[in-house]
Length: 413
Image 1 (cartoon, rainbow, N blue to C red):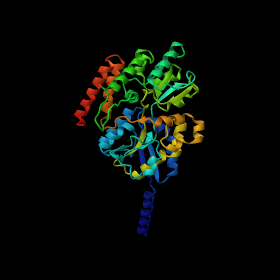
Image 2 (image 1 turned 135 degrees about the horizontal axis):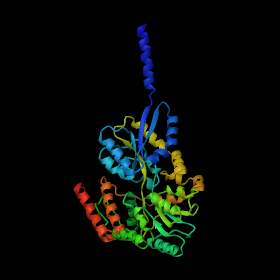
Image 3 (image 1 turned 60 degrees about the horizontal axis):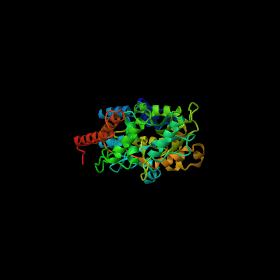
């Protein structure tokens, strides 16, 4: 009789164990963790008893979330199954062996469904290492109440700005991210590409900072400040300061990311219903460029539940989730079909302009050494913008220092 009770008890214990759901944890920067709260709740309801998703709310800053993730990975077994990654991290994390390829989880049809810009920056050495959650790109915001159409070239932007400033319509022409941080690298990439140049090509090893387009790009940004088209304070501007300046009616143009659109339509905005979106200016004969700033989900090596983790990835990046994140938070969708959604276009007309700009998306140099290469550019360009060096000398120093970084790592051509 006792043995029967023991056997029955064991069976009950086994059934309890069998019902335990897979626990999946994903580390995200604070803004993304906050914006996906409802999606996580919905996922857990739909997968109750099978998968439980927990999003870990990390720091606000991009660099801080990377530091947290790397410190955890260096300790060995990561406490996370997935990581929401900035597009520039992929080569570094993949080369270090921290990521599990996703090729077997996503089909060719899935890849073809991505919008052109959203498909960039997800692979490393032909392996799919990240699935995009959003498709951030740099945009030029312009005042529709002050002009009939946006500028196409740097010269047009200057001319319109100076006319509006001379008439007293606005204090400044153009505000952008000029502080010494990653945002400055994003700004510069758009300008050097639009001037027909190239920052750095990991494939060829070519550094284009000290070439004519690189110097001209630095000269143009510097001249905006020297001529008063941009405020001198722009050298301390990140996205938030740039947005606040434009939102309060201080400028005719702003460079920012898609999220700014929703902020500009709020009741406290002095430019509500007075703003348009366009690609960044470019020199005649060259295409505009939009820095790709997307975030995507990566599977960390050593995850105890890879299949369930990828199910969570697919849910968070599904069409329904993409529409929700765009409507509620202004996150640029990654799937082509959403940009053709006529119902969504009626209520969100800016989506069409964002989709057009996405076709001009440019990746920052895809190298495991990106953080070091970008740091060099930020320091040298900031020195130029704050009057410490000339644009020519600044770009010469930037190219030389970039070469030294590559040589020290054995990555020079």
